[in-house]
Image (spheres, rainbow, N blue to C red):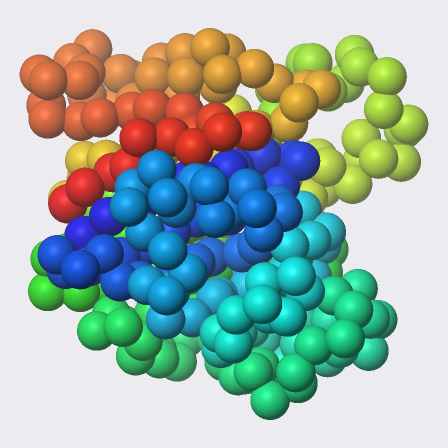
Length: 269
């Protein structure tokens, strides 16, 4: 099973998840240009002919900006919640697209695409009806979980048996508070419908590593309020508190940071 981040950050997101030798799979979000997604897939010898569906988490531009051009060139089914689909189609943010390509999903109800079980689960974010996804196959289970203002026991229940995860570490709280963002925007990011901080991400992972999670990518980093080394060290510190200072090969745990603007080496289960 492969989890491959083509881009993950406040400027745009798109992630490939596949299972099997043919590298068939799905995309989670299309928040960068069609060309960049095509180029990112090509680096792993994948084309859009390999894509069985596009799963959208929510309607913000950094998650759907490339969707319209993709659908006008490739006839690929799009899966999203009722609220997300309604917003996309009514707002016209994706331009003229074939409405019949859109398939509605419900939180906690799995769908089967490309030999994989894809399960949406609700998240707390300021969007119409946002969800994240876990993906399971005979090889294992992975997840892409970003754009959450908070996590709950419900969130953890969906993620606790993952082998690999891309999890949001959006901002450093001190950088955000001292930065140039308007006060209202700071409150939005820090609020329950905003984004997970590095610290919150680390605390969440402390809960999850007690299960079988061994491959972690930190994602959706803010350009203005975070940087990769800080996110990595903050989360690493939290994990070391839970593992008595052991880390990396000592406990078979990989921790990396997904590139904001470029593809990242895939997690392979």
